[in-house]
Length: 205
Image (cartoon, rainbow, N blue to C red; front, side, top):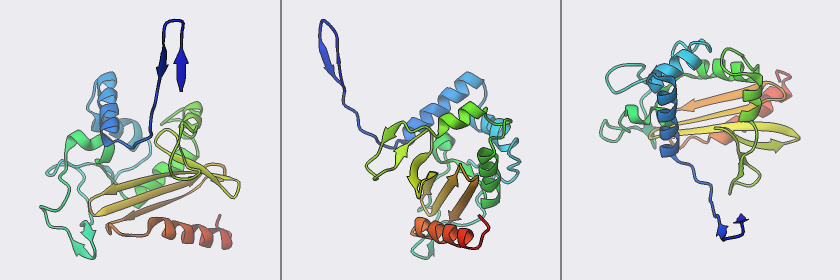
């Protein structure tokens, strides 16, 4: 992008790059504006309205601990191999949840539950903000969005040592899939595609 005025020309270059640090800084902004710790804000404004009773944060000693042990290549990771639980990383990777709870959140999002966000805010979250190196996928607010078979698809991936997650939603149809696994090498997208085909061919969707 080239921006100019009468005095000078400035060449502005940028490149998309996912950043845990960016999300952690955003979490610090949420805490500063709300006047409460990030985990308490999320619990009060997202988890409770979504009825996510089995979700929360874990600092290694207190909170909602994972119910499944992380694995890699079929072996449970030792304590030293596991990613340590750090409250400083709560905004980017700290939430412990279940497929059922994330399904509740996804349902609330697809139905635009006004106890969480306003309708305009839900729409803003799906608006593409930048292109990516991943084909037709664009970045929205926390979602990756693209079109497939003339349907809008919004997805978000999660990855922590020994764990993988994938949320895929179809906002126009109000359908979605939640995949959680404690196998680091699980083929998430292949599983999601098979599930989608099965649900559509059976008439469930």
